[in-house]
Image (cartoon, rainbow, N blue to C red; front, side):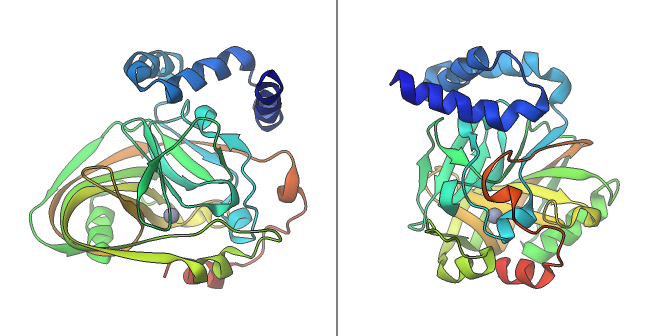
Length: 288
Ligand SMILES: [Zn+2]
């Protein structure tokens, strides 16, 4: 057991070394507490936000979208550590096993059965984006909109195209189509090929929350330009990466995140993968 914890701490050390993080063992045990003792979430979230109060408008990202597109799926950061950087976000897990969604400080793994499973602090992520969600602007949507119409509506109301936004929409959906991707085996295929094995779920007449981000065009290669949304049902039992929907009505909130922090893997496939290539075609395949 001690050996295992030491190993995990070493992984955290290797991942966070470049960020100049100190006092990791203490941080780590606190973080583990956060995840494994749900009763403590309120108090620990408070202490985390006290510590990181200046970080609430920081979008914290692990790895890059192009690394993921190229098949860099080995998890590098424990969710316990990720959770200290935000209570809201999206991503995936070690081996590309399912869709990650974080909402109100709870982390979920949506597997290929469409079910949202609780996540333990030891689970690793190869790619994730999180922040502390604090609504800066709220919009009531009274009329039905599909995914494209929602994006267009939000675009009209965002103060600038050049910032990052966290987007949360509580809605009533007559229809929603979502997907999840199964765990991949090595040698890992590229993401465009991995998603050919995705499971697609369709929900009808369901309430739930869209969780995600709008990133500016100029982040191509680093993050997904435009909107990237995941979904979870109101009862927090099911969801996925959003492909399409018809929303009858809903409440949208945006959080302007003016700071961007990216943590890169300091080992593994990330070292050798050829980044900086034009992966536009891959990106289009992945989003269908
Ligand atoms: Zn996704």
